[in-house]
Amino acid sequence: MGKVSLQIDGQPVTVEAGTSILDAAAQVGIKIPTLCYLEEINKVGACRICVVEVEGEKDLVAACNTPAEDGMVVHTNTPAVRASRRTTLELILSDHPAECLTCVRNGNCELQALASQLNVRTVRFGGATHAGLPRDDSTPALVRDPRKCILCGRCVSVCNNIQAVGAIELQGLGFEAFIGPPANLELAATSCVQCGQCALVCPTAAIAEKDDIDKVWAALADPQKHVVVQTAPATRVTVGEEFGLTPGTPVTGKMVAAFRRLGFDAVFDTNFAADLTIMEEGSELIERVKNGGVLPQFTSCCPGWIKYVEHFYPAFLPHISSCKSPQQMFGAVAKTYYAQKIGIDPADIFVVSVMPCTAKKFEAERPEMNAASTYWNNPRIHRDVDAVLTSRELVRMIKQAGIDFADLPPDEYDKPLGVSTGAAAIFGATGGVLEAALRTAYELLTGKTLEKVDFHEVRGLKGVKEAVVPVNGTELKVMVVHGLNNARYAMEKLKAGALKDYHFIEVMCCPGGCIGGGGQPIPTDTPVRHRRIEGIYQVDAAMKYRKSHENPAIKELYEEFLEKPLGHKSHTLLHTQYTPRG
Image (cartoon, rainbow, N blue to C red; front, side):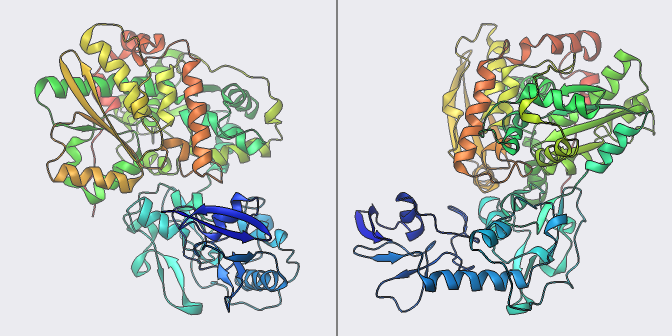
């Protein structure tokens, strides 16, 4: 495309043609404030916070969507620019409820940070807040508070362009404008998959996760309850960010220590159940390949992805593995095998999950996720997983308890449901489930040791990744996609008959996989995703066992309780069915 040279605040800069003024300024260390802007997703210039002066232009221009031009002279900090930004921000604040002290985003709110940065100390205008728009807490996962919406459009762009769901939209004009589901529906009545990507990019708290902290505190205070916790693979490289550590820093031992101080009776690892998932899902894949089952087989670990197919591609539900997610496998095993092993009434076990994902809250409340109740024929067991906390909620609990997380000495998970492998750890990154499955499927199919366990071809943030893996005379064709718009691409290819030669396809709803989940620390951007993924593979490389079938606790589980993968008991507890939705 060629290059252009310009001057920004007296600094010469040369950039590729088509580069925005915003990005050009960043290359010479000038940070122009933004609000509606979202890299590669939302560049609409709607909020006007990023305005700059360009010599020769009559009006100020938005830096986020104005391309740099050769010979352009830009000023980012003139009196006119500062006055415009402050006035714009005051107008936004005049429509915003002054509830900072009680807001879940207090201290991590972009609107709040901008007010400080731009030195806005008074608001000269009287606004018309969206007081008449009701709070929507209809879903198990997310809460919408339209009063706090600043109409930046980020959530709409993510829902439409990244997730291909379109559950919310900009409606109305002027003072009557608002963002929400069409036809004034509640979120629960839409095709929302409850992935939480909207909450992850919201600059305020107009959309946030539904808070279940008090429910967990109540369980911990109940002497009749045996409260156990499981931690998802991705949380161990993200939670530390909220305590000043570099994104991607493994904090597994510190998390375990924090749970002990919070008062949990046992601290376990979802990675144990991830290894169990590979045993069941890998065996299911082998059975389908050998016996002419429905192929390609899609992964089933991600509840947002499952709900997406239920809404948009219900005819293809037979392609999805019948395996429950690791979260739900863990809950079923905790209230059967573990309860039996330690001699506790399963109705008195309270299972808490710490997940990177808001959709896990929805998944835990699905009516079919009550395998333990069916197994024991005990109606007192209401659900296999009783409460789901996001990474952000866990951080709030730790801070409530006054725990100095950064200085905690590391601790170890309890046995047996805390023993896991590196294969389970990589579930947290896009491509990880597929790679873990290949490590096990290869050895189960060939009877040979897989020497090279790292499948680099399915790693990284490319939206669609493909590979061919020779296994015992068969070439396994596999694919990895992340982000539901990429999933739509795969499903349309399946619909057109273009995937008939493929065997296994991993889909993760959120960009980057679980490390970019809707319940993860804010901000989550591309550089942060890269560092978190690096942390995940660092955890994998350090593990004693790196293949799920080598996990001694999984072997013991089958010997003592489940008998074999895909057996009767496994199907009862670890497998499920799906629901076509409108």
